[in-house]
Amino acid sequence: MPKMKTNRGAAKRFKVTGKGKIAYAKSNASHILTKKSPKRKRALRKSDLIDKSNKAMVKRLIPYG
Image 1 (cartoon, helix red, strand yellow):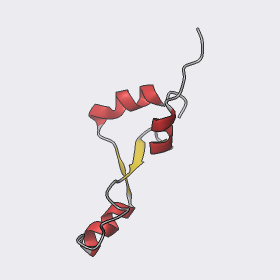
Image 2 (cartoon, one colour):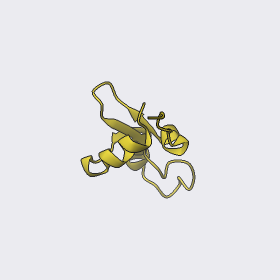
Image 3 (cartoon, rainbow, N blue to C red):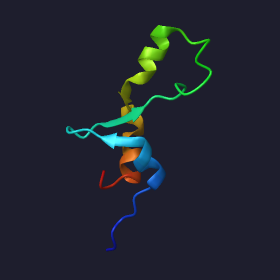
C-alpha cells in the first residue's frame, strides 16, 4: 500500500492539537477592518476548533498531521 498524499492546501490551513483536535485560523481578519467592532476583531485573532461533523473529512486530507 503506498503512502497517502497530504492535501497541501489543507495542511496550510489546519493544525492538529496535542489531543488530536483540529484547529484553524478564523477568516475575515485581513482587510475592511474599519466597520468591524474591536470586540469582533479581537475574537478573529484567536484560533478555533473545527466542528466534529467536519473532523473526518479534514483528517482524511491531513493523514499525517
